[in-house]
Image (cartoon, rainbow, N blue to C red; front, side, top):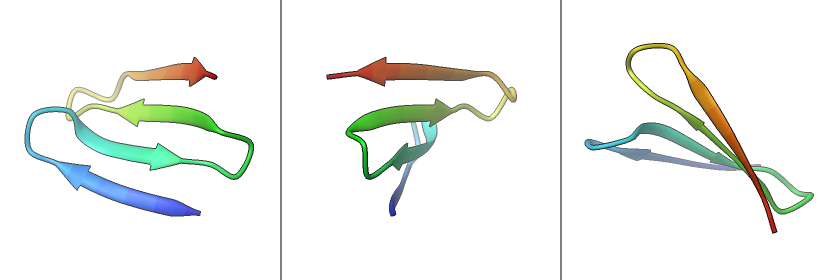
Amino acid sequence: MNIKKTEANGCIIATANTDLIVLTDEGFFTRFSY
């Protein structure tokens, strides 16, 4: 798993199945599929 932290978007997690899960500081998450 690749975990990257950004100041703007909080925590961005790139999973092995090329899905991006963005966890913001507010506690919401958005999932992107490529």
